[in-house]
Length: 524
Image (cartoon, rainbow, N blue to C red):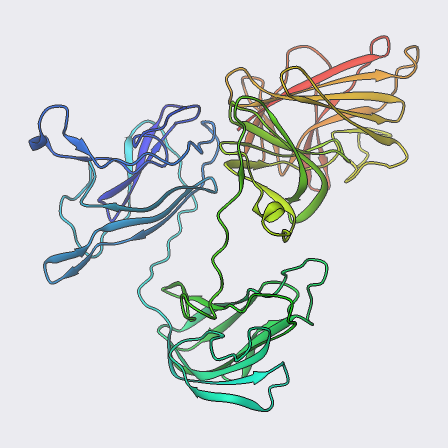
C-alpha cells in the first residue's frame, strides 16, 4: 500500500509504478503513467513537463499482482544526430491499453542517464516502499522478413486453372483478381528470414465468416507453404488461420494461394502477417488500397450515464460463449456480468462498460459483447448447490430438475435483483457496487417453501481457484493473489476445501424460520 516505483526503459524513460487503486483522476504520477521530464531552467512551478497520465485507472488493489506489458521503440540516430524520439508504442496495464504511441523527447525525471543512445539497460526504481516484481520477460526487435522475386497468377473461381493473368508483383493483395466475387490467386517467391528460429504466420481473409449461419469452406480459403511444406491451411471456417515453422536464416521459397467462390460476400481483402526471433509482428501484404482488408469499424461502446444499464447479450467466458448472459453497468464505474441460467457471476471490472461492435455492426459476427476496463474473470459456476456431504464435488452447471430462473426485478435506483428457484428455495441475488465505488458486494436472500423444514446441505460457493488463503485480518486472498474476498462478521463459519486439485471457499446456508441471508464482498 502506497508504495512507489518505476520501470525505466533504457534506464531513461519511466513508466510509473504506484499504488493508485481508487484514484478517480489519475495523473502522470499514477500507475501506468509516463512520468514527466524535469528542467530547473524552466522556472519555478514550470520545471515539470510532458508527463502523460494513463487513459484510465486500471489498477488492482495493493497486495494483488499487477500485469504490465510495454512495447517500446528506442530513439534512432544518424551519427550523433537524433532522427526519431523514443516512443511508448503500447503500454497495457492489467490487459487495458493505458498508453499508445507516446513520444518522449528525452529522459524523464530521476533517470539513471541524461543522454540518449540507441541501446540501454532496463532499470527498476526501488527506493519508495516495498515492491515485488516477477516474471520479467523481454523480446528485442531488430529486423524484418523480406519478400523477393514475387510473381502471381490469377484465376476465375477456385479451380486454379486456367490462369487469365500472370506477372510480377510488388506486394501481396487480391488486386490481380478480375472479379471481386469469384476468384483465386497464387503467389510465388522467396522470403528471407533474418534469424534462425521459430516464426509464426497469420493468414486473414475478410470474406470469411461474414455470416455466422453460412460461413464455411464453400466461401473460400487459402494456404501458405514454405520450402514445399504446408505452414498455414486456412479452412474457411474462421477469418484467420495460423501456423508456426522453424526457419534457418536466409531465403526460403514460398507459395501463397487463396480463393473466393461465393458472390454474395463483399470482402476481397487478404492479410499475411509474420513474427519471429527479433522480428516484430509485421505485414507481408500491401498495407492499403484494393485487395487489402477493410479496417474494422469504430468500436460501439455502451456507457452508463446517470443510471445503471442492464444489457442482455451473448458473452465469451473462458473461451465458451454464454448465451444467457446479462451485464450490469453502474455510473460509479464498477460493472459485472452474470449468467441467468446458472445464477453465476462471470466477470467483474472497473472502467468503461461494454464494446458491442460484434453485436450491432452490420449483422454482427460472434454476436457478443466484450467487457472493457480491468476485468476480473470469475469461475462462472453456479453460486448455490445442494451437496450430499462436504466432500461432494461442486457442479459445473445447475441441475435443470432443481433450477428455475424467474428473470430479474429492477429497483428504483435501476439495479437488478436476479430471481431464481433452486429446489424448494426461492433466491433473490443482489449484486451492487460498494459505497466507495471500488468493489462488489453480493447479498443472497433465500426463502424455503416450508418454513418449518430447513433445507439441508445447501452451500454458497464464494471463490474457487488454485488456492484460497485466509489472511490475518480475516479476509481471504484468492488464486495467485488475483483478488480478495471479505466475509461479514457472524454467520456460519466458512469452509475451505480441496476439489479436483483446486480450493474452494464455501459458506453453509443456515435457515432460520425458513429464511437465510448470505453475503460477501469481492475486492480487486
